Image (cartoon, rainbow, N blue to C red; front, side, top):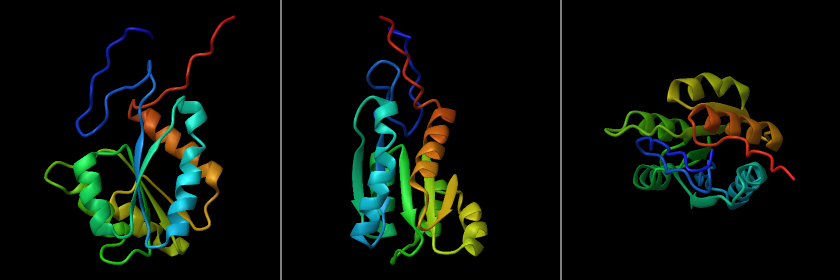
Length: 158
């Protein structure tokens, strides 16, 4: 809706072009290849979004925690096997912070048996690696839309 004002949620970016949000993500993994695959997965929502996403890479949970609390990205994707604070500790620390993180947290698991830890940590979604990139992207979109951060672009009439 052109000209409509939007309420800015605490810890979230203001709306960008029209009704579409400008989306930032922190990608946490000790493995650069895993971070690259995370970025490729999330990039698949750019077409729906109507603009590019911005990524911050973090090699461990401590760096990701600092970046997420400082920059308040809309998305945090965390690899379970990170050293110096793994995905579960990162998610739990973000949710339990003095100013709790309200963005989307996705955890990439090594095994299905760790799903209960992902749930306990406060993650919004979790997938066993290798995760289906389309399923992850669709779920991210749903979670962002549920928070009012994105919506499907209106089709242009000719």
